[in-house]
Image (cartoon, rainbow, N blue to C red; front, side):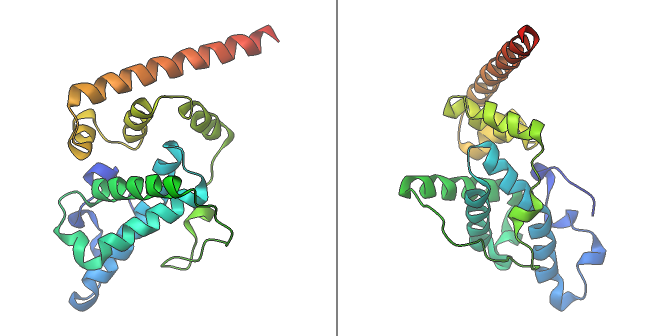
Length: 188
């Protein structure tokens, strides 16, 4: 399946061979959407500070709100999904949820956590993102997930200039942090 930026994923983006007969079309399209987006949304939430468990749980809960019958009516289901998943994650952190049970299998029989492979470099980036103020981290996470400043502003109900400024500040902070780290490694 072709990888599509989340901001451009719509029903018409689903390859015809995954749609099947008319009677199973909606279910197959939703399953294809789930397969493509679950890992991406989980990674997006990890960029915003979620643990893999929290990210998978919040993303799955967001999918439950979409359900196969609702997502068809949305112009940008990927953006809606991320917004709902992020709110779910924030509610989790407000409740101080401490998971004790393993994450159950999801549709398709695979746990999304097992599909998220974080390289050492990606983990360093996640750690650096954690040092950013919330608005900057949010702007950077949406950008890393393929959304433009204008799309992010529209989704979050913010002014595009504010999102651009937060992204610019985040980028500057990250560049400076990387320079400091490189200098420290050079001095060793």
